[in-house]
Image 1 (cartoon, rainbow, N blue to C red):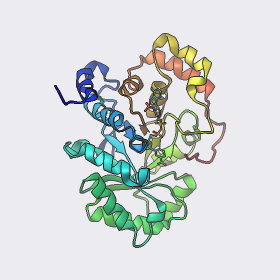
Image 2 (cartoon, rainbow, N blue to C red):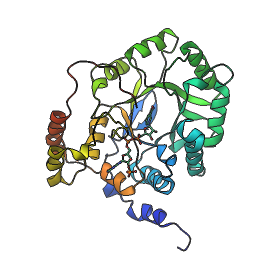
Image 3 (cartoon, helix red, strand yellow):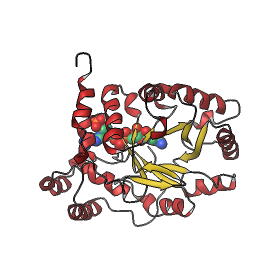
Image 4 (cartoon, rainbow, N blue to C red):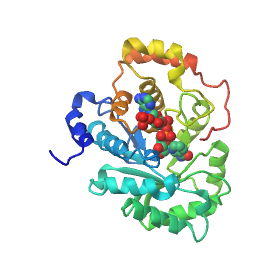
Length: 304
Ligand SMILES: NC(=O)c1ccc[n+]([C@@H]2O[C@H](COP(=O)([O-])OP(=O)(O)OC[C@H]3O[C@@H](n4cnc5c(N)ncnc54)[C@H](OP(=O)(O)O)[C@@H]3O)[C@@H](O)[C@H]2O)c1
């Protein structure tokens, strides 16, 4: 065993079928002939230097929980996270991964789009990205973006394309610009910001766009304090040995969307994915809904 890092041994020793949270029928979303796990892991942690922990979590998420969605972006550490993810997946079965990457709006312009995409492919060490997103709208020329996404699909550099941080009006503009085949819109949607449940998510479903939530645990959202400071919530959870994060993730997945979260701790990963008894979940959800209700009417999409 000498020379093998401790975290690597732990993953395999800890990995057992009993720890599976989702049964196999529930864990995947079938969308346009793709099988996508309902939960995915973000890679921002590579940027903050949590490499060993995040690597362990990604391996464990795949091996023990059947998670296949891993999200990155050229923006994260200026390519550092793409490179770290690429190193990790180098020897993995490519068909068992659904890789999501994003281009910055400032690079989605003539002369730069291809360069950005090619650099991302190179950093990831793959021939094709499964889902390539415009990171946010800003003043991107949508018809240009749509044309370039279609071209990249024809060239076999990406399998699907989409957008991120688009509200209903932005999606309508995207459709006008020729983007009706948009695969996915990645949005901030979590217990603290539930406006999208009222209008944007139903709109996406109606238009055959996969909703994907980012920061599903609300981290980095300065507008809201940490849920662990909510005494009523923590008191309700205590008898059930359930973490608030596990309930937050389950609430998101019950909206039939893919939910991305981040962790660099295998203990947190296991806590977050622990099975919650259905009756217990129903009781807890009632309390969570009371403490963090949907807004009474649609509100503009929040962004981090
Ligand atoms: N499209 C966009 O504009 C956009 C914007 C932001 C993020 N994203 C994507 O979404 C991914 C996930 O978002 P995120 O990482 O910002 O936020 P998140 O999932 O809301 O939260 C991650 C944080 O929660 C902590 N955490 C996780 N489980 C925990 C537990 N059981 N107990 C206590 N703390 C726990 C993690 O710390 P530990 O490491 O200690 O567990 C980490 O600090 C990103 O990596 C990125 O890929 C996309």
